[in-house]
Length: 117
Length: 107
Image (cartoon, each protein chain N blue to C red):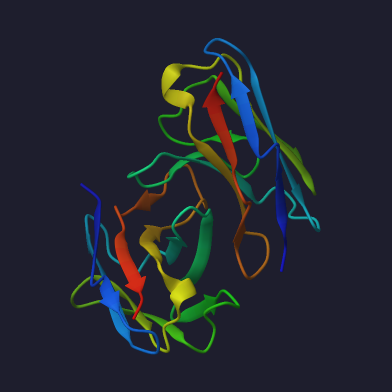
């Protein structure tokens, strides 16, 4: 059974750092493209980042230079390192496998990040 | 960046009625357009991928059409569980983007 479980969210002050984790079971993160998508309170979905292939990465302009996506194949886990956090980064962060690239994609249930002093 | 503009922002309909949701891209995305359904407290659910292909387990009342810059999601006869927010999403160009959403509410 495929499962994605996010963790690492919480309350952080502006300018701080946080690392989100997405523990995966039922498939290997080495094979599939993996994305982070977020939803700010009262707002729509926003794509954040993707990691695919050997180690190709892309980022939304809003997080470029501040966020880093990575994976640990030995732990079968996806990460999102978030630095220089801003109030506007407050959101539920979802990890997802193979976003809309076939008949099935898989999402976690999300982890809430709140950036506030 | 490709901007996806969804219309209407809110659609008020009754169960049994037909829903037509639109998504317009600021430049061609070919057929690399998907539709998601999102309910509060849940993960988004893929409905349609590559413009017109129903995702696994999606009922036949959901259909997608279009190519290039203009796309439509049609729900032929609304069920009570269909009332949610719907997003279009393009994977044609980096960065990937979502539309701002259409809220489908019960009239």
